[in-house]
Length: 192
Image (tube, rainbow, N blue to C red):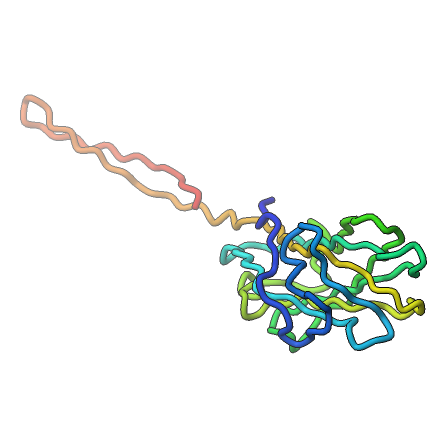
């Protein structure tokens, strides 16, 4: 199984742009995006991940990784939901969620190497125009404290096609000293 390696977003706000400093999630550098529930800043999306998925492969899984933390020990635990789109945000997978309970930056993963998020994918679904990741907070944080999201990254796992076997015939013609020629045929099986 191959994968794309971890890829960071390079654009935000295709359909939802509510987090403060939303572009801070492009790198893990302790400069975080800010979000909190019970306000109008709990929904955000990201795209242009540069996921170069080769044509004709089988998609085995998609992993989303989020680095986040509670800003204060007084803040409630908070849950970030993630949904993925393959058509620019017109349709979405079912949501997956993780909950943060500490004030230390921690990565949590959604999906994985064998999780296709409930659908079949093609390489075109991961183009910068089509693939969008949508993040939103669950209800439950009533303290009004902000939460920090420091980094978001995505990896796609895939298996390359094995192709089919082809048989080729190769001929050798040998001229002997007495002017007589002989031909020998060889067959070789090639796997594409």
